[in-house]
Image (cartoon, rainbow, N blue to C red; front, side):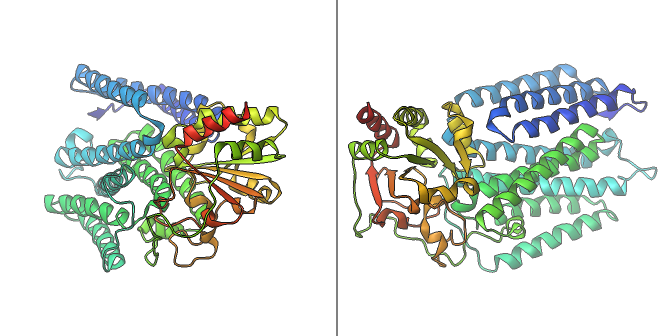
Length: 470
């Protein structure tokens, strides 16, 4: 596919408009309240970019391209309509893998037929700068693909969420990355096929090696980081294709994903550099017991919970992945509405990594029409637990575990957690006392004197509480 030599003046303007739409999309997605508007801007910008690219390039068969777009669009539409919110994290990981593989395939096509991409020099060989762009694009794309596949398998339960620690993994990872960069440099002097395909193969390998050691507690950061990788892969391929829209889009996705990852690393007290290198996940962590503990704990009922919350002045609700699995957000909002009718102040506390991906809980609460002004992030709500009568925890395990502050052997040690234990009473909704959180550690909160365990399916328990409030 060749780019037209004499580019019409409207083409850069169209790509600029598309870029502005993408920026507005990112701005809109920064808040649940404006997220739909942001999505619309993103779709408009992508439509402008795609149409502009098709119009300004010589293509072999427009019909084939339109058929491919229709098939891909139909598959995406069906998946988006059918996918459960609990499966959204693995869906995002799967989409990232497709972006990475697309970058690899574009790079391979450019290497096998450079004349079609307009990257041949006067000597009949691929331009040096194009070799660097191609090498980096393929490497980042392959890392994104294989890393996203591992993330998908862990999130989907096909692979254990526990860290899989390989001996000498830091040496292996750094050595492999050094070889990849060295071969990309050598590729500028020798465009032999073995160099290109070795870079590709090693990049697929390092993607697996980087993500396998990362445990479930850190998976939200992984999803965000892979999002960033997919953006940089697209940007690199944009240079190869000489397509401004891809460069702009990829750079926006890459930079925004990196910034989000940095913010999440700070929220989890992780090193940003260790995330990039795959060097986190708790090598020294000792997982707590998975079975039911024999330590004393208190059990409560829906009637107990209803009575305590009805008498409270303020209740802080802490949602987690258990709420998502049970699809309890609508019943939870109904419970909150009934409490507000009784004069109780209700707020929601969201940990930055609650659920399995950034913003997971915010989306679920927005789906249930929870008012945005009642939802607070960790740094804005943590100081209020000590002044609250009840903390109602529904399926949020690791992000409420007090041992993150004290137990140096814990895989979540150092991660800022919600200070729910400081509330006068903690009501903790959980299916059973057996089983640990996604990080594989037992929650010390279960055994505190002010904690009452509400053992049942989250949705059923909340519905029973609503009946008791009525």
